[in-house]
Image (cartoon, rainbow, N blue to C red):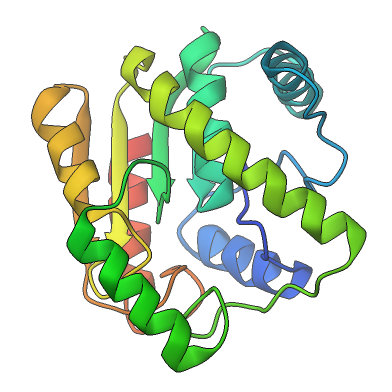
Length: 215
């Protein structure tokens, strides 16, 4: 089965190589769909969706049925792709951040940001405020809203994985979503790191969950 990977906003090449190595150790591989998100159009929703589908076709030139494995920002784009494409067999969302936070979650996020003096906790790579990264952050906010709408149209088998101690995950929303939609399953991993495939002691469990979903 063909696997496509949509990376997180701050995922660098070293982290991608670590993830690819972990996949290979488990007899799997993937094609990275976007090397960066700075060039995606934000003018209209239609332009954005066309650009995503064009990139998926470029990454899957034979038009095979494909699994989408997504992390963080990549989850937003993966949901938009799965809502519009008939070529997606299965969807894996790792640490998705779309959806509304509960009042309690917002309070915890505010506390974390004050304590850490940065917008992303637990060892995530910091993003410098240059022009391209600011555009990427704006894109994240826009696609986050669109993903919250598009997920309602996604009917392919979907697995959501999130670190239970990552306070930037809208857990209440995701649990409500799983209770409403029969095609979505949810698993947590006991770590605080935003990408459990890269850091912490949950790489093996996370990989096993992914492998079971896309087999």
